Image (cartoon, rainbow, N blue to C red; front, side, top):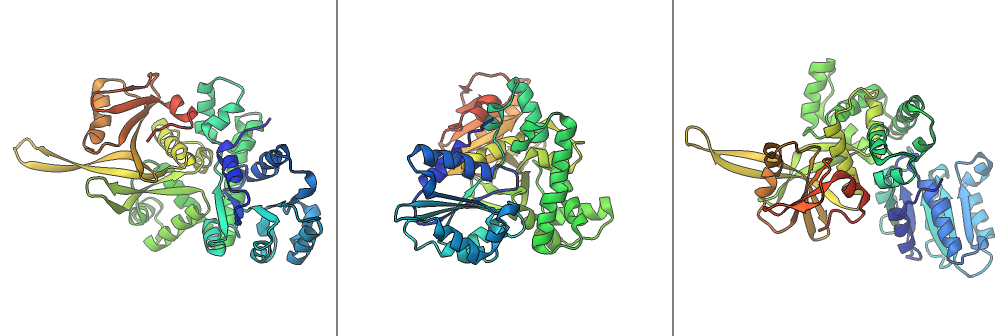
Length: 417
């Protein structure tokens, strides 16, 4: 079974010979090694590069333990660079090498070496890539399978695929597991024994139970606005645990660095300014979100909103939460202001569009409710409503375009800017 990851493969191909270290990052088990050692390797071979000019080292493999020594790894790479032609050096799980930064930097001035590495766990989290390789590295962030990638390898109807995806997410290994029990065990074990352990080791966290509880609260409130102070009060009243807002903020930042969650801040569309708090948090993978809650909370509306967010991010779009102000008269004739929300303000370069996620639009009243905030935006950027209703794409009199959820998920070019 081969799953195409063309979004990331295209980025790797475009980055060939750019003089930088290509750093493939992302949470464990999202397909980084497969992308580099299978898909990119196949691309090189089909482009005419022979095996003698492709140097591949899996540093997680026990048989390559000796190469985790930095000097031994350099000697090995040098010994396989037989001539002056371009050599493609691929190192999987490079964080297993002591002083790996020095090893990689040693090849930046080697004109016939093109470097590609993957990294994960406690020594290779998000901010490490930025700080250790500033100006010398090109990061390619790999996410779990998008729905389009997932359904391409799913044996069944797309409706069944969506239900499976909303429940168990897009980690590739899930496609090989035989039943729901195996999928639940896999995700819960991965969350507890791998992701939380990585974070605990990297940041020397003593009380990881608090971190796990915090992620549980965040998982329960996807699609809702929150901040460290609000979460602190929730801990105090629900769990009777005293945890400071600063500690909570630190834990949230750590979870973002580890690629488990992402933060989407509010943007005042008319005022053209960001409102830093409260913000929304979304899980990078829905299966991990559900595993943290032991698969007990399955609110489809919130899951679909998280799914739409992830799809936008996979397509390379920066996403904020939109805020617009409505002015109207109350029953006494006085003036009143109300803040309305647009689910996603989507930016790509200088282009923008607005996206509202609406699971169902059963009647005109519900439709009017969903588009009210979009109507208050008086610029010329495109406006969309994504709905699971079986609608053909159309545009209403207010210029709002309605798109079926499957069409949105399966079309790489949607939304248009």
